[in-house]
Image (cartoon, rainbow, N blue to C red; front, side):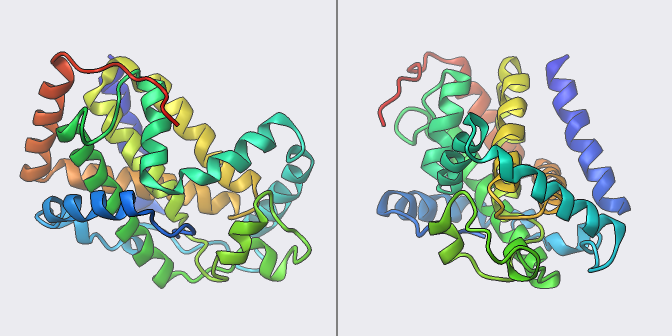
Length: 262
């Protein structure tokens, strides 16, 4: 039942899409792992997915949608000193793959590392890479300015260090959200007993981007749509389906339970 709900959720976001940026430098660990995954991910047709083709254009300057984005951003300013804001600031570090795996490990109770679960890790990294490329294509098609460029220039966000590194025109759709969301859907599909918890966690993590002021609310919503598109397209590829079978088989075996190490 949960497995079907994940598929339905992914499909719903895909329907919305059809109707309608990485800020951290990779650590050595990240780069080595990603290089390995790229060899497998490059076999997938959806790896080169043009994310911009599946999204409507972002809100225009004087539209009611842009006004709603502005009001939503202003509503988050009072949250940043609260617990939810502090969590949002910490969530921004999940822009690095192994850190996201550490978070999802705590949710699933499985150690999502290449050593403990190599097949599962390859599946999720391939998803991450495909999602990032799709989001970059959307960024190129829709070079939307970030909130502080024209609307709230005094906003240092809840992570000024990230604001200093962020480009002015890489807001739509959120690459961060696209990656976090697509990986959550893939992991939920192979761990259906943890699907609900994973989606709840992914919602929280992706909302953090908006709370921190690093993107508009509609950027986050578009990122979820695109993440669902990426996962749906990957799921139709034979190589990806085979990798999912390997990951499921691996998770059904005796695997090391998650223990926080960082």
